[in-house]
Image 1: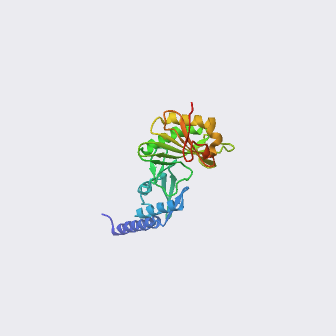
Image 2 (image 1 turned 90 degrees about the vertical axis):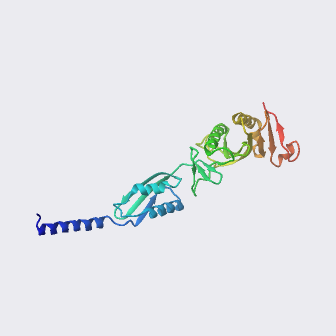
Length: 258
């Protein structure tokens, strides 16, 4: 049987240990957010972390804090670590987005919708009535691959309610050290609108590019739109002041290509 002094000594040691642990395991007072984020994005992360704080630093469940951040659609990689004496550090890398999706946010390369208040502005815009984001991304990549060789960039992709596709093109300025296959829309000039219809998109895009290289490119500043919704040939509408070259004012000038 233990003696009374031994019991007292053990109690004192336990109390001292508990006091020491409490001194080390402090209340979290600082949440630090790292990464190339806008202030509004960092503030949202701090708010979410603050709502999830329910303990002291050493006993905090960082996995649960990470889950709270990942509930947002735009973070790609998230790490959470503890820094003694009272700090939680959250490092966030955004998911890559490559296009705008109507008013619903942005798209990743895989066609997933990401909602972020501070997405890039130099990406193409998609507005599709029928196709899913993934399907629209596939159409864009296919057609952009064809357009890039001609120094053209797709700035907007539109699909109407009957499945007809329309492209707003940008004429890419070829800068030193860059190639025609660059797809960013900076340093470009407005190009024509191209109406492709609902099917045979590749065939009709090739028809447009043939006409572009043969005679449209040299008059690019005056081309308003090119309509390829025909079995063969194209129709071109010219911008002012060359509208008089059309068949009649305000109408399209039909041009056959081979």
